[in-house]
Length: 251
Image 1 (cartoon, rainbow, N blue to C red):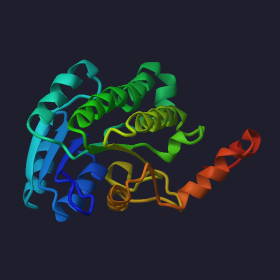
Image 2 (tube, helix red, strand yellow):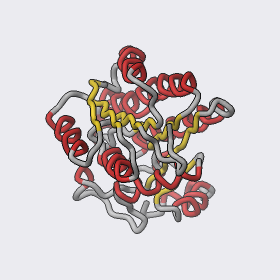
Image 3 (cartoon, rainbow, N blue to C red):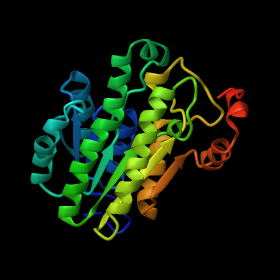
Image 4 (tube, helix red, strand yellow):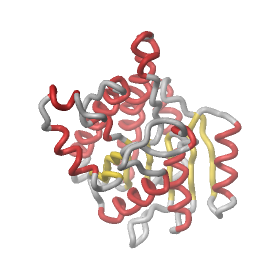
């Protein structure tokens, strides 16, 4: 169960090597989270991530999870919940793709969509159902401001996040009154090891900043969190710009 400050005692991260997921785990372990599950494809990186969290004092276990194999999700995730209640699930997996390459290779574009949307829908529904059976818990889903409006530079990725965002909002409505909190997290461009050398924006953020926003959102039982917060206003304005004008913006 969560403590009096809304901090989960147990955490399941789908996307166990995600920099945002691991930053969130570190932050919550420092706030008394004691059990962490890292779900992802078996790899040295997953094992290393688990060991680093163990050094912080948490009990950490790994589980083989593949977003692209939704048929395995009920059994794989069911085994995790069978080990004991999970107070928080962080859905942190996803791939950015390569816009130019993916436009020329439709199968690559489909892989982006299947990972970021189809896989997330499957895992999200399985976890939401398990949390509902418990009668408590939070499902936190990493979306993106890229899903707010299509951009020429990343509309394949953005469309997958747009679908995920709408799905998460609807799932939150469906979970009302069940004891399950569903929270959408919409970061801007995140500076991390995986994005080194890519675009820079004035409202870029970091994995640690996203983790801090997630913790605050848990305490407040927020339905949506923007990182940084100023993006909420910026994207509200951009959503309503006429398309001819929007196309001319350097975004």
